[in-house]
Length: 348
Image 1 (tube, rainbow, N blue to C red):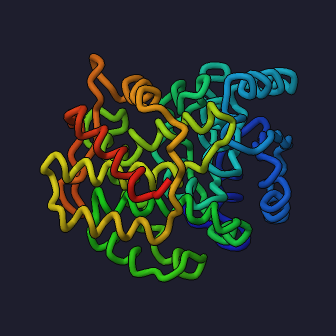
Image 2: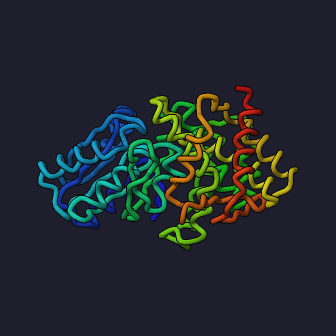
């Protein structure tokens, strides 16, 4: 399902030749339209007619209003069930494009061509599609696999540093929950750039793919991929509500610091491991100011997390470097302590 493209995109062109599609719709945002679409179209070889669908960039566009516009455009262009959507973009495009495809006419086929590190190592893999509801992250969505995931790592050369760093958070997470050697390789990087990160991308993608194959509908082990996301998503949602959005990876890094400390408070990992993990995450990420967020607002979001059952906050926490437990219920006091810990070390 995951294919690394050569410079001629021959694997993608073979895929289009081997399948029968009535029309192709290429979903991009303004950034991928400018930086990635010319490369894509320059290598695309197909006689199938295609249209470009462009949306504004940013998490704030991942909503039902944008989706409705895309549904209407597909309808006006007479897209049928044999049409193909190609999601050429980052996490927002792959999440939202997959949702549009999996719901339009009860489902048409789509492929993902991730253009950011975050979408390569996370969003494009696993068949989770989704949009935000109000300021709640990924509250509406489907489980629907893309037909294929085609990866062209050279797209990363178009990324600003902050986007590269955002995706790196998911790579760190993969190591922490499932592969100690992957974690140890990543934390040896002195700086985050294409040259340093590239050799580790496929390992990270494979870790997520293997977890998903064991548990597509997230009934058990797939929940470990949520490490760092329970608190991280709450903060990301609050920032979105205040119209000062942060990148997903920045929120995950914050969440991993809090939830690593929480793992220690709950007696799941040693203080030594906790300190080592947090120090290494801090090497790559700036702190986020939480001083404007009320504790009750954070807890309101934690209690409304989609992973919860019967108002119990379900955490995925570390049980070691490279191992993780899921559906873990923490003491409320310890959750508060983890947030206080982050505020203390951040200095805000």
